[in-house]
Image: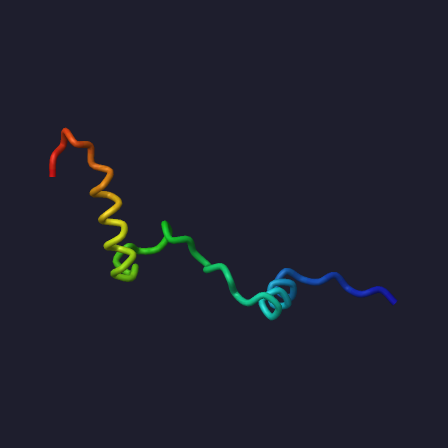
Length: 58
């Protein structure tokens, strides 16, 4: 007796039961920046401000 091959959704379900849903469906750059938590937005703003060349002033 041979087993039928596992379908994609069955494999995903089995792996999710074992490992949980560790990865989001979308990446951070695919999401709307307005929905990001305030801490993420402030960290992004700080990083962007640090990248301004000195001759541009702030």
